[in-house]
Length: 357
Ligand code: MTE
Image (cartoon, rainbow, N blue to C red; front, side):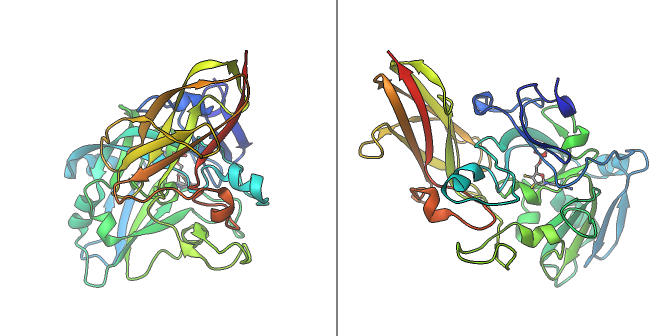
């Protein structure tokens, strides 16, 4: 076992704070085993005593709440949601290959994982507190202290009330039928399906109804700037995930025999869209083969796809592109979506490998 009970072959970008993704080929299953689930942390993982922990619900509410884990379980009904969590920095390495992005984690295509989450609906907790007129955003504050800010501050962010009140947003204490582990936010985390992972705040301490978006540093940090802007400038804040896909097998840089080869991967549309089609090309995008695509479980869960191509001996490049239920297709190259902080790379998937005779 590696750090935080993860598999030994995790690609660990940083040990403290812990930032790690699995080998892409390990993401072939619909649900991701806990030892394989990627982990993204901005500070040390806090150890919180669940017996002393309380969730505070405050701001523009009729009644402020302070709830223990037991009270939360007793007052509200338990729900399960299958949802993919994906970091906004997923596939940043491909952007960096085009132009460097100093000081950011070079995530490959595996800063993404899927789980069956168990908890209560945020909507029901907010109904318990009673939202007051003017409440337009729901802000979350975590119990960790992040290292990239001076002074150190807890991680946080917000979502608009409409998303917060949708039935799929959970305050979760369980993952894949097990208690949430420390590295994934125990005792309680937010799960905002279809939105960038940063809004799914871990080690949740506070839920605040506000007229404005969260003033936490990390709310605005996760934003897109035009390529020529200063990296510390004010950007367009990210919310729903962008349509994208990745090739999981064959692995980048691998060597395999020429001949019929299964090519497989995942695709995710984001927000409330689904993936409707995935194409694969072995001739730099001149011709495409439509892959077999799993049907959507719900709009917030990835869909795996696969096809078999007969590959000649030599250096190979494979491309994949996904289409969504609004008929949008991914943009072609990392060059067109490059941005100074390296978020939301949704360009075509591309892997290089070698086939031997
Ligand atoms: N919540 C807190 N409190 N601190 C964090 O550093 N990282 C966010 C989000 N919630 C983070 C957090 C980011 S950027 C992502 S992508 C997801 O948690 C990662 O969740 P995971 O580590 O469970 O995979």
